[in-house]
Length: 521
Image (cartoon, rainbow, N blue to C red; front, side):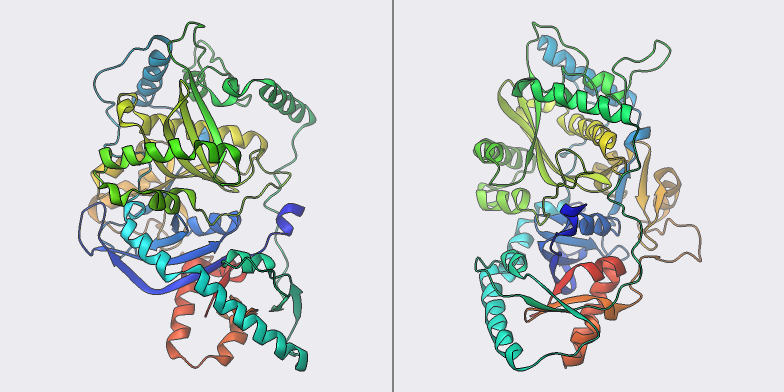
């Protein structure tokens, strides 16, 4: 827990109003509508809470569809991996992969629920014009210069005046400066805080586990570490399944997901598949050494599958979209062994990358961001296969971190036939766009057949429990000072400022508004 306690806060820059842009689903030129903010940095807990309120990231841009106005409403969908059972078509995909690995067999035909597009490709993620425009608006060097100037000015004032507020404390601003683009260390930042109500339970700590379970887990991890890089059992088609889900099903029971994925291959197998989990960081040697090959695969995929012209899938777009994440890597003692943050799950076939699943590992879930793969291997239904591997991976992480038990698949768009396949990973839930509670998808589908936009919570009296109730407690970062909005607004004369801040508070909710720093210039 100490590792989390020392984390510096998330810093976001909210864009007032709503963005209108071309919809990647129905192709309406200006029908897609969303609110957005640029995340200079973000803790995994803040992002977890945001996606549980309908937000989603594309690179460092975090957006939330205006559900009752956008042309194609996008409902956050999550699968429950602990109860997941592969369907008949899912089993076909897994068996097809095993046959290919074992004997080199290439199956003809297409899986009936194989998406035409990549498994987790969301339309806004492909709108590079939007992301490029936002990146220019958030030029970090300009922002850094402004902050540096205000810091120096504030330091001079501080020598002559002592501010008398309800309570104040000092925090080191070096982390904040670095997040906003400055490489220069700076002096401490004045922080004005409002006393908080009592803290709740520590959600980062899983329930106590039996000593026997812990010993078994350590033994399994030790065996995995002793294996050569190409033989990691927990991540390979030929390896054993996690101990929580037995490797062999009883004769009267259907095979589990792990049975099908980790089925043993003959020594004379035609191919070898290895799945590697690599942190998204240019400081990581494995990420750095595989970057060129991963980028080449991305270009090939975008041009073949999405028909993108070469100038729209360059190295800049790739890095900004899939290698630039606002999430701060965290490694608390009670978290998963790989830690929390953004990762590339690379699928290596015979020493070559054939697919990359971009995922975020968060306190309560694995969140799928994007998938790109080699079109030459489309016959392996890699969209479905990677989703099933990510579900199995979530189950594996659950063994050590029991609160991490969901698999988020991005957005479900019922009005877009190409995106309805996400509803076939059962059991799954959709997020109510008004009260932010999870509702089983079976209960939502009848309503969606009648209307694009629906409130799934059937209780007419239910409200958003996490809504912004005390906007004055919202944290603002302005001219190097961190202060509650109640203090900040006393010095503001622009009438539109209040509307913008209140809109932001309503969208992120009370908890995030108190933890995250809203940058105001």
